[in-house]
Amino acid sequence: MAAADTVAPAETVRTDVLVVGAGPSGLMAADMLAKLGVDAIVVDGKDGPTRESRALVVQARSMELYDQLGLADRVLAQRGAALGAVLCFRHRVLGEIPFREFGAATTPFPDITVFEQSRNERLLVDALGERGGEVRWEHRLVALEPHAASVTARLEAPGGPVEIDARWVVGADGAHSAVRELCRIPFEGVTNEHTFFVADAVGASGLVEGRVNIRMAPDDLLLSFPMGEPGHARILGVVRDADLAAGGELPEALVRSRIARGFTVGYRSSTWFATYRLHHRVAARFRDGRCFIVGDAAHIHSPVGGQGMNTGLQDAHNLACALADVLVGGMPERRLDRYEAERRPVARKLVATTDRLFGLVTADTALTRFIRGRAIPAMGPIAIRLLPRIIGGPRLFGFLSQTRIRYRMSLTRPPRSQARDDVVGKRLPFAGGDPSNFDSLRPMRWQVHGYGAPADLVGSVAERLGIDHHVFPPDANGRLRSDRLYLVRPDGFVAAEASVTAGRAARAGRPEAVPASFREQLSA
Image (cartoon, rainbow, N blue to C red; front, side, top):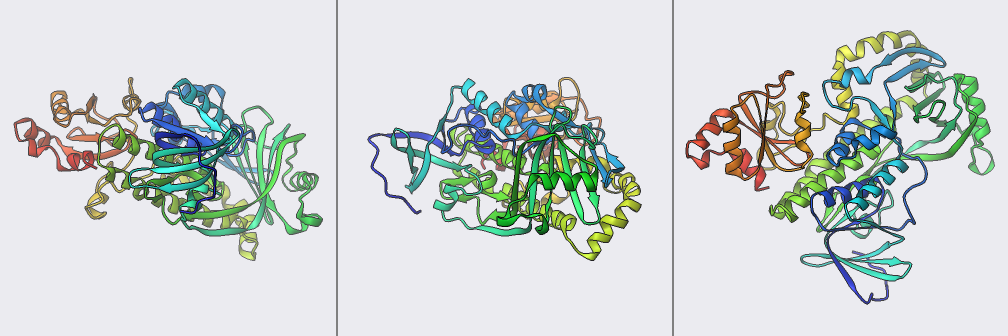
């Protein structure tokens, strides 16, 4: 790894995990590690949390992570909510996709939660402080020196050089990640040909309030997201070359004039206005020895669907659980191999999907102008009604909310062996009830679940494995079977299943009959 010349610090601080970067991903990792009892230090070169709104949407899966941290109620108390999305041609509403209706049976959090990045960061910083942790601001990473059982990080800080020796390093330091660059991990991908503008508008008019607005015109596109307060909205669009002033600047007044003329949308003022180019990139690997990367350090893509911050939060959650399994739970270090095996395919699929989708809606060709100007106005109302029936409303919700993510749980058996199963590798299906089966996930421990299975059987199998267990009534949705036992990981994913018959054999005194898939997961 490349290393900058620094003056040797007088003292070296030691920790189990060094988290570099205190954006949403780094703070999620730090909070999860603190909850799980892992000693960690968090550093960031900035002087404090992000002040701009930036990322806006917290999807259902991320809300479930906040619930595990005991923070969901705080988010709900401060959030705005988008109850659905409306498709419009210019100012005419063609139809609505009701997210809440589609997600009600999938998650306790069926709305699109509007909770901007700056608020996420403040929430997580406060929660970390309540757990006895803190962020070391204005600590900039300049070098990494790997050893057999640790990594020494050298940082520049206001009081002089700092040296931290950590068993593991988590790079959550954004698209220009120093950790990724010091580890010489290629960041492969492309830059979109278009430039985009973003405005956090105050006093917005002409939008459908409380909804994501998707507005089309033959030669234009506008997206907006509600930001909680009435008339406060995030507005995004494509910058045309003809709009740019000398020096490549985009006058905000020109944008306001354009969207008023093309979409009958206006706003009084903005708290943030910027232009940017979109990149679609995925790191060649998410791990280099004892160093890992998460969030924007590992992947960047378009804001379509509000997936970026959420994917980073889930990277951090996955990795924190794996690190705790090793550092606290005593699992072999090969447990950490699952992080890249599970999360990099998610990032690759997301980047490919958002790249194609954004390319389709922003392309300026005769075909796309015909689609936006003729096909969408004519067929949009029918498509909005039929799409949920063709794809399935809950299925569509699952893709957008990131509740349908699936991991390959066995790294030794071929992928086909998992394809027939409806549950293994997915996050635990929501079974509702009071208490909900999701309540059992808050302690973040390995556990055996039974849904209508004999309680004493579930308990005896869990006892043999030395982990927790929970018994629930039969799943009314039929996704969790009464003739099965389920092994659930601390991150809420179903790691394995076994038949009740196999559990009875184990209880009858045949310890080798404890399901092999359960033993495989618990031994990493």
